Amino acid sequence: MYKKILKEGEKFGEWTVLKQIPERIHGHISYLVRCSCGTEAIHAGFYLRTSKSLYCRSCSAKKRMPKGKNCYAFKHGATKSDHPLRKTYSIWIMMRQRCNDENSRDYKNYGGRGISVCSEWDEFDNFHKDMGQCPKGLSLDRIDNDGNYEKSNCHWATRKQQNNNRRDNTFFMVDGEKVIRTKIQEKLGWTRDMYRRRSEKYGSDWIIQQYKDSL
Image (cartoon, rainbow, N blue to C red; front, side, top):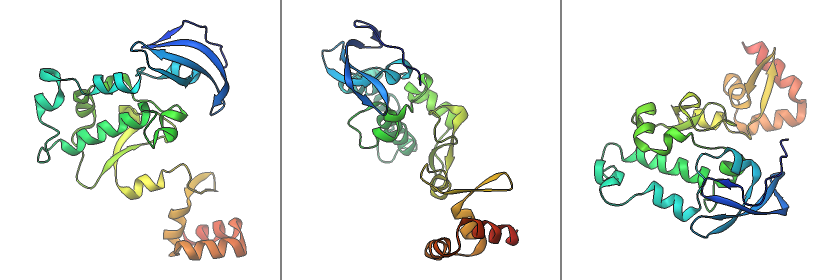
């Protein structure tokens, strides 16, 4: 793990390092920092070194939602309920919140474990240019669940595809190929309860053999 100690007074975006603290965040050395607006917070050194959007919640909100003629809603009207880009815009907002806003309930699973949004996508127009309008019935998904939000790692996916890409899913190695549990269930025609009972009774090796025999 990278453990370079940050120095008092070092700046990362709008944050200035005040001091190192004993507590760690997900195993990373952490620091008390102060935003240029005066807001103080605790951040892991890993977050300060790698994040593309280094502002406190208040400053970040102001930058995300500028007023007057620079406001996206003013220029494009995407916040209106009947606007064709409303869903795409909402997805962009939620993506940035879970990576940048420590008060977001999803932050611990995204920004809290080092997931960030590429700097190009700080602007909605760039996000829309790269990803296009969100198709009906789909939502934004990362191909590599441990990777960042960027064009090369994102696509529009169905709910089923997203569930298959969850970090807490069970995978099996079948002849060198990683196969998700739900794919095995579907191939064998088992419900989740049937899988659980047979897994407890026969074990994973038996399940893998049943799957291989069905191919």
